[in-house]
Structure formats: structure tokens, C-alpha cells
Amino acid sequence: KPLLLLCSALVVQPIIFKGMEIIFPVESNTAYVKITPNMNKIYFAVTVCIRFFTDYRTKEQAIFSLATPSHADGFVIFRGDGGKYRVYIGDRGIVFTGLPDKMNEWNSVCGTWNAGTGITQLWVNGKPSAKKALHAGGSISGTAIIILGQDQDTYGGGFDTFDSFYGHETDVHMWDTVLSPCEIQSYMEDGIYTPGNVINWKSLEQTSFGNVVIERKQNLIC
Image 1 (cartoon, rainbow, N blue to C red):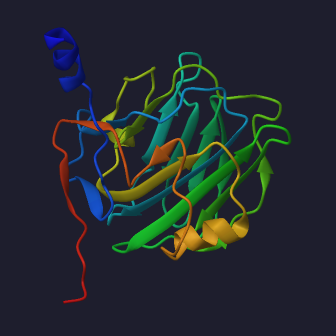
Image 2: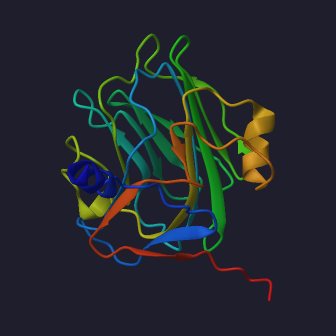
């Protein structure tokens, strides 16, 4: 019985992150947050939603990085300059332009992918991109490592300061389905929506490394 009690004490419990934000206050190749997903499966559909705040426009920044043993860019979202975004799935990339990106304000971003058709789409601040095909007939398989703050050039590592995220992130969710436009809009407007079943910001298991600050999200209404 004492041994069983000791083992139970070592179990990591998810932390309630609702109302919290992760801040990456410096550019580096050492600061990141590793998220433990709620399930380990083969994905044939994905939706990832995230909010971020930054004043940095001079380079692409990885705002979400999922790697598998066979694909370092399993599902990655890069934010570029002037409404330009890049999505990688299975190490293949596609560019979306003309999206209503904002600087020094919170941006809400959702990326969706359906393996059957390869249809990939981004939503930024309530506006959808054109639909484009990427990794049709493929899958995202193998134990996923999910990182915020860095782009994985290798499985769980290979970080480069040039690709690092510099700013704030919050409300990270991931689903193993393609959300409907109405569900995405509810997330964008911070309304009522079903939390992610793969990553749920309201109950998140994570580990932070390097210069990372986690604090309550600022509310400008006094």
C-alpha cells in the first residue's frame, strides 16, 4: 500500500489554464512549452485554434508545432508578415495570403485539415482563407510532440531562434475533427464552444522550458 500511494503521488494532474497566457519575452532557441495531448491516435482530420499577440513582423514565427517520428512538420502553423501564413502537414507546406492579421492586438487563428480531400483552410480573426489541398490521402500518425514557442526541425528538437515565437499565446485547442464554420466563429468571438478533445486549454498538461512566463491574461476593462 505505501508503494501504491507513492506512485499515485507522482501522477501529473492537468492545470486549469483558462484565463491564463504564455509569454515568450525574448527570442531564443531554448524557450518553449511542451504540451501533452489527451489522446494518442492516427489523425485523419485536425482543427487547431490559438490566440496570439505580438509586435514582431520581420520574420515568420511558429505559433504551433506538432511533430511525429516520421515528420518534423507534422502539423505546423507559421505566421508571417502582412497577413501571410504558412501551414505544413506531413512536411509539405502551403501559403495563405491576404488574411486580416493585426499587430499589437490579439489574433485568433484556426487551421483545419481533412485527409480525405486534403482540403486545408485557415481562419484569421473571423475571416476564412481560400481552401487549398495539402497531404491528401495522408495521415498524422505516431506519438505526437506538440510545442509552443519553437518550430521542430527534428522530432522534439532542432530549434532555431529565427523560427521562434516572440510574444503571447493563449486559448490553445486541438480537435481530431474539422470544426464547422459556426463552431470556428464561436471560438473567434470567445463565445460558447466545445473545448478541444486533443488539447484543451481549460485543462492542460504542459511543461515549460527556458525563459517562459505564465500569468493571468491582462484585462483592459478596469
